[in-house]
Image (tube, rainbow, N blue to C red; front, side):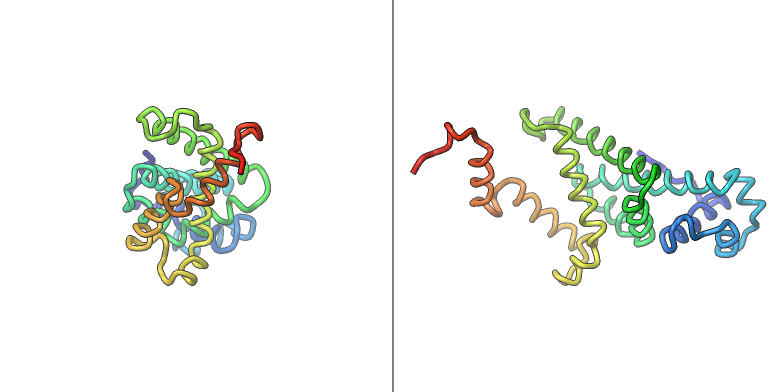
Length: 207
């Protein structure tokens, strides 16, 4: 479990960088802008993080840690962890910019989240919550894509449904609907159709 540090000057600098990087993108934010926003000096930023690149790494680590906590909370059906982390628009903006950018940072960030998702699925499998014949890697990928889609489409979903999907009320409703969908109880005809298409032609039922 990732544990953010207390509100020290170092943490304030990092959190301010997260805000600005999420708003404008990493390349568009000089250290001067971070210093001005948090009302601290550039030398103090260098003292704590060594360089601009060090600050970027710290911001990535912090946000990915929060997101990892939220994904674990979702897997354990503990909605408060999801709301506290993913419900923060600062985190949402940062992750959106990070994962949809190009380059090594984006690839490394997604790989880390996928590794975390895979570890979570493996744990659930060991606890008997995942089908024995399930493809762990593929399931981890699908579940991660689902969680990220809610994060990135949050505003559009809220406009359509009238409820923020990451609010306590919205998360309860969303989780219940997804559970019914994944179990085949919400759209049984589709579930049967998918199951039939996945069978070899010789084993499919005939009319």
